[in-house]
Length: 92
Image (cartoon, rainbow, N blue to C red):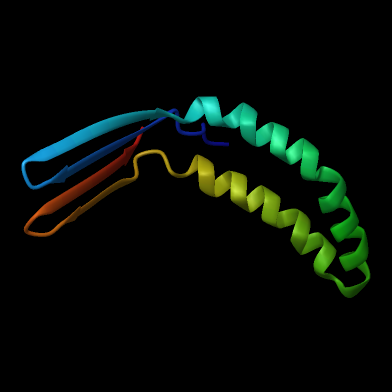
């Protein structure tokens, strides 16, 4: 499995001003784990309710797919620019 991203760099320039942020994504992982633990009974109930229709297994696979997508974000670079503004997002 791939390692999850560690940092996200956001740079915004508009006109004469601009600023940049370094967002530590590794600090969000414990928060996401707490949210997952709190929501796990609801997820379990949803899986049990959806299992007879065949959607229960797919509901479980959504959690795995979400983790894989998050881990695949390493190296993502997005740059959007027009005449007055520039936004750059990089995931490290």
